[in-house]
Each structure stands twice: as C-alpha cells, then as structure tokens.
Length: 286
Image 1: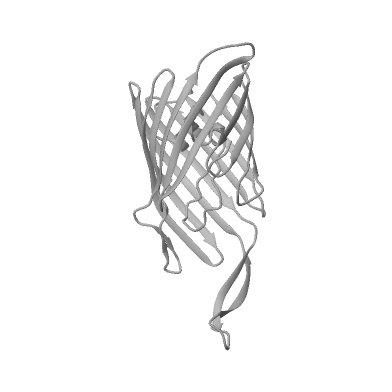
Image 2: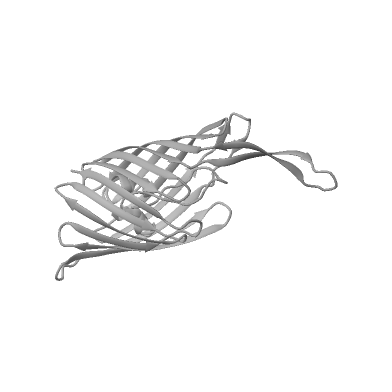
C-alpha cells in the first residue's frame, strides 16, 4: 500500500509506496516483507520469503500516475532491483518577460504545457548476521520537464535489529552528494531524510484474529521538518490483512489478500494537498 519518495526538492507533492508499508504510516513499514521492507528500511534482516515480486499502480488527482515494479532475493545476502515512474498531467509552462510599465512585475509569457516525468532505477544489497542487518541502495534518477532533462545518483542506507517480537530500524534516504544536474545548467539538491522506527508484534490468536502488529516512528527531512508515524496491521484468518496508519501527511488504510503466495492489495490515502489517492498492488512471494 502506499509510499514513495518524490526525489527532487521543490517537486515533492506527496509520498506514496505500494504494499503494507504505506498504511503502516512508516511506523512499522518493515512488517511488510521483501520488496516493501527493503524500500522502507534496507538494513533490516532477511525477509521470511526467499523471492518476491511486486507491481503497484497509484492514481492521484490532476492526471498524475505512479507505477512501481520490484523484486528481491532474500537470503543472508539480499539483492533488490526495482524501478518507479511518476507522470503528471499537463503543467503550464511560463517564463518571465520584460517588466511591465509603471510596475515592478514582469510580464508572464505562456509557452504551452508539458508533462513532468520522474523515474528511478534502484539496485540494493543487504547482509544479515544473527539478528542484525545492514543494507545499501544505489538509485539512478532521471527527470524530464518541457525541453529539459536532469539526472543524478543518490543512495539509501540503513541498519536494523529484529528479535522475535521487536524490530528497530534506522535508515537514511536521498543522500545525493553530486546533486541532480539539468541540461539548462541548474544543479538541484535532494532533501535527505532520516527515519527511526520501532515495531512490536502482538503474537496471539483469538477467534478470527491471528495477530496484530503495531509500530511508531519519526522522519526528519532536511530543513528541520519532522513527521511522526504510527500504524498497525491486523491479520484475519489465513488470507486477509487490514492496515491503517497516520504518517504526518494524512491517514492511510487498506486491505490485502494473500493465497498460495499471490498477493492482491488496495490502499487509500488522504492528503492535505489533494483529495487522496488509490493504490492497487499485485505480487508473488515464495
């Protein structure tokens, strides 16, 4: 279910990502195994699944769409490969002209419309020993707007501890020492993000409920921006999971079905900037 990171500072409408993680509000995003967990916290120990594949599509307001596809091999050494793409609807393109007579305001020249496209390829590696894990993700970022093109490399890294019921995770995202270089000569710096999260597994079985998972966490984004997170997952029977959470930007909730390794998932997120977004995911785990 939800959560992605918009890469470029200044173009950061919301955050979204597929799988359970989004509805957990980042508080316990790593309760989602495999691809989702690696995306959230690359340093956590290996998933319970050896191989998993995930595809997700998210629809937002104003004609914006987000697609994610990823796979991970989860052993003592973890390998993670994924790609994501976001495409907006048409954005008005303008530029400042001469100063209007008798004022200090420039004339606005309309140049037409264009889509903004942003895509990223992610290659990650993780290593687990005992109950401790660490990981690194290398991101190749590209963006297109009007006649301009930008690209650059960023890094995510993290470490984590996983006991029988307790999880602790520390991760750093969007480390971009060289910036994003655009063809018009502009260099854009990404806002790094630090996440600290803890989660607890309430392992019990009562009637139809097989377990409740809860988590809390906090994000710090460059610029002294703090976002708290809290979320839960309720496992009903063998096949159904209900999720909900708050991630500092809005409330998330969703439902997922899993049978014989096949996963179907839906999530809805409310946001301040827009009415909300719908996310649909399908995956396979072994």
